[in-house]
Length: 84
Ligand SMILES: [Zn+2]
Image (cartoon, rainbow, N blue to C red; front, top):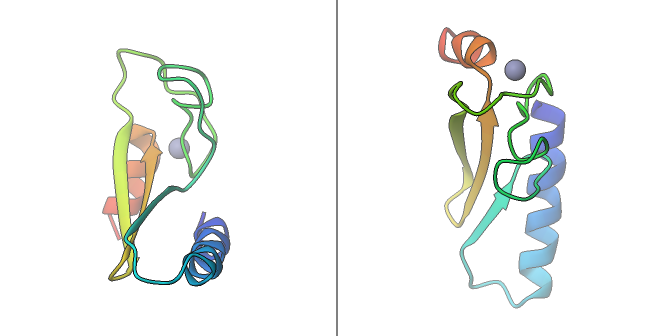
């Protein structure tokens, strides 16, 4: 997940610079899809599908003051990440 985050941040930095620089950006960490779809409800750490009725926990990183990266974690990965 950290490698994917680094790649997404690097890409956002390039795209922001190409767009002129002075904008705030929000990007997804992982796969996206229609709301409630398998892609939309997959854990961004382990890829496990989290069915409706089980909480998909939102994760927000701010690797730059102008950038927010959002993702979702299954309950098991949330426990591992939050336990650090
Ligand atoms: Zn997970």
